[in-house]
Image (tube, rainbow, N blue to C red):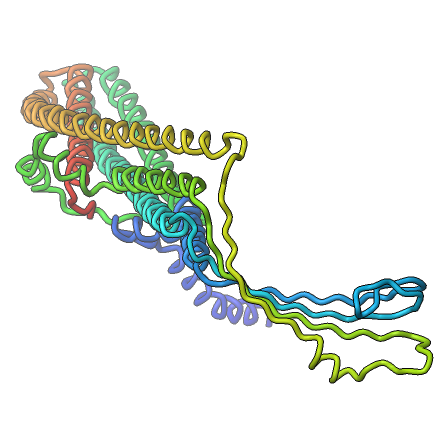
Length: 449
């Protein structure tokens, strides 16, 4: 019975085990998926969104400041002994009074402060929107860099695997040569040592790939990199295409200066500071407002001799008071506060202008660096390709000599190491060029994916 029970348990658990293995299949992501997911879950982006929402509320508050305000107040007072009578004189009597007041006030002229403040808040909102776009762009570039690093490590891992295969083939060939007496046994030891080194390199390449996937998954704010992998795109013709599309720094800057969020944000902040200067100067002008109010009161006197208090309804009918009036406020002297605020606003304009100039200068330098880095990376890639071709030819000749027993293990390993180094260099140069050219295209308005 125990055996039957064990078989039943195995039968029940087998689908669960298979299902668990299927769950471990990595989810493969494209560059577009990585960028979109990162933008949706990145904390910096979400903070920029909150900042934009805050600027929207500031603009909304400024726009509604044109509306009249409405206030209501009430009071209940008790007087004992000598207190004010309804005729305004003080009398020796105890009484209670209840009052209600409703007032409204609307600005008629405020020295164009509200008008310019609304425009300034609109510019600040536009700057916040562009800062949000800038954060998204910076994040997209970081994602692209990490994504390409994973692709590079994948190809380096393939190179390391091929080197292990070659080393295993070398060991097998050396064993045959040693058995036939064409090579000394020390050659076999050298071949096995080379295989051990290549297996170590393979382990290191696999670890580098895992770490690069970890870095990318952390940038995406994924919980774990265990089920995460990326798509290996077709990069056969990308080098030639990207090289043909390269534009000079001046051409790229001409297009980019009017479209980059960093430039737009600086321009909007400059315009906002110019409007803030007008807001500050409005304090020199008189302000005019229209006000209206309504008030009413009820009085109750205790211990009246020979009379009684008027009814509540009659008092409300007789004690009501309405008023409408204009209020003008003319600034004469406020201890130079307005003058200094105006000067500070002008300094802020100069500072924002310098910020704009500096942002343009930084952008042009970045475009220059991206262009010359792309050109240098392409030249390095072409040189590395030639080095790979020469290394492959040298390896083929050396492999034939080694199989014929006319070459030593040291010479064969030396040529094989040079080939592996050339393959690694050409891969690094290829992905470096792809990233540099992508940055340049990005500045020129082209999408990253």
